[in-house]
Length: 193
Image (cartoon, rainbow, N blue to C red; front, side, top):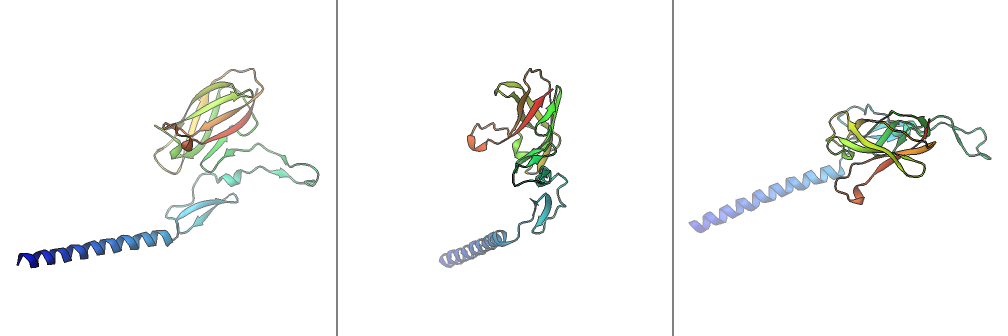
């Protein structure tokens, strides 16, 4: 009698384990073969990829920020950028200052980066001269919830003094681990007034 109970119990346990395994296998197959539901930036516009549940991002698509180029005589002269451009990567965007913009103190730095760039709602901002000497550094602060994979707006104000005529701004991913594989940054060339 006890033996039959053990056999029945084992049969039920194996059956239940098989059902759970089958459900997990089906979920995995559906996730891997189903459409990805997201928005993709292509040629300066947000395009649906799959069937995203959220509306198109309200942020500027980085491809829309490409410089306007004068192509009147592109065969003999290099393209000429006709307006300053924002700096961006696949994970961050610097809206102010624009590349090669004339800047002075106080310098308001604005942009957005994926929440993964922040640690404790801030990320590092450093201003260098053309000789790679640091002029000033400080944090940029997230303007909304930073614990997300989505873009988060940031703002920083840098107060500085320099005799240099040019330099660059570095907006970096905060990397408390110190591991090189977690490093990322954007470099924005600037000119000083």
